[in-house]
Length: 194
Length: 179
Image (cartoon, rainbow over all chains, first blue to last red; front, side, top):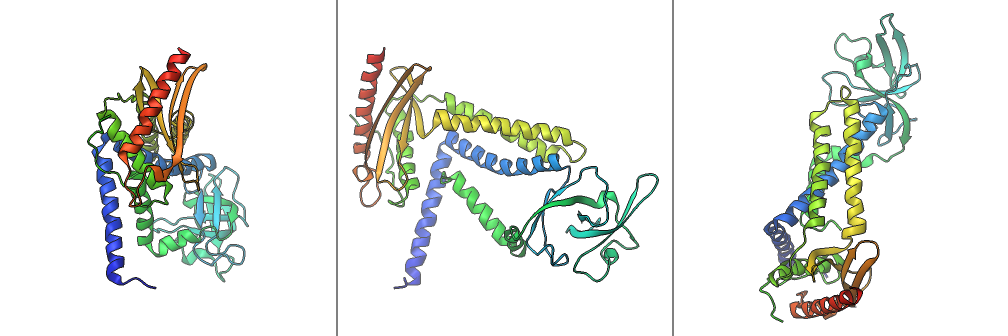
């Protein structure tokens, strides 16, 4: 039998009051509060340091990316996770690369069509999505014909199919990100992290 | 035995191991110092210092160093972070374990452990002491949580304290035998 709204509201209020009291109790004991804050800090920094560690090992500024569009179908689908690296091997046509045009927020995952290397080592690369009919010059900056090495974020090495759908949902509904992370942080502080 | 003046502790959910352990832990943290048991903060201080070092490495690598210019230094900070984080994990796993408070009993550092196995109705309270590799004394008492909590979730402070004091006496007896 469904509960009336006023009883559900009272239960929610009771739970909120309980959590507020728990937070107040934790704050009364400074050592315990400091320990919980440091625990939360260590949890956050574990994720950040793992990311930094991947950056150091792969030499790429963004070692893991999620495919956001269908421009590389059927090889890469929306929601696939790509692991990138930026080692010193030369870029060759056929490589799947991730690049970010200056001034644009979102990096692009496409395939290299042409590579031109000048005598001074400067690279000029033309890319195209597998599922697109034309090259990427329309995506580049105004009057930009090719992309250079500094715009390259990495070369795709491994991909995990559909593992990044959660990232897409969090991007589509940003409030969900704040709710999830905020509530996890709150529960760690009041000692309910087990 | 006089009960110290401690607020009532209530477990929000009698079926939640987290809530039950939290209520017991808060009681011991409030009551034992008021009863005259001296707290030993050595291992918790060590843990706090190690966590602060970890967070310092993390902050420095995240906010000060720039990639790719400081790639090597970032690598050093990452390695340092995980090294100290590993030490914290080692202390948590092998020293602190399920301890809720560390006190002095008969001049010895004693960890008060409160544990509940998953899907079990029994709560175990234990006193654990390690003084080097050879000398070790552990006493514990396990009983149903219904012995300590009433149906509304309130912790029976007299009951849990009575069992705790019995354990202290047993511990002191074991310790004097070893000595």
